[in-house]
Image (cartoon, rainbow, N blue to C red; front, side, top):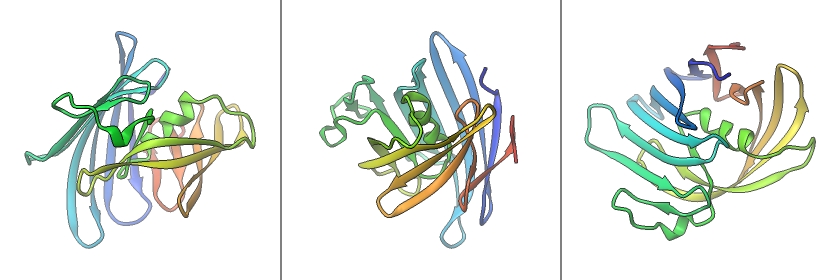
Length: 191
């Protein structure tokens, strides 16, 4: 059973994320608010909502800056076809199933829970990377490799471009420790 509430904090700087899970109508509904700062002293407040099917496949994502009109809404058929708010197909995202939102560790949970994993077998995927700073999106390649699997936690090596990190997740596949970026503050297995 998924936890109802999770809090993360960045490992440097200021900020928090409060994420809520809800399961209904064979869907997993994610509702989250992220407050933090980037680069200098620019403070941002972002709300995102994700709808997943029971297989952890992303069906829609909406991101909005709180208190502002700026936002982004994308939907997917779950098989790699993405559409914008007007229902227009976005060809440059063809083949992506998962999303990666820059300001949260949560979206690493999507491929971790969606894909079957064998120890030390690297899995390469194409994802929709969404920058929380400007709400721009693009397709990027990511790799996940299961390094250790335990009853209460597992460790995955995440690799994209020149960036590599070992991510610790709980028994639900939800990030507990993302070294140098995020730590879970509250919820099961908080550190």
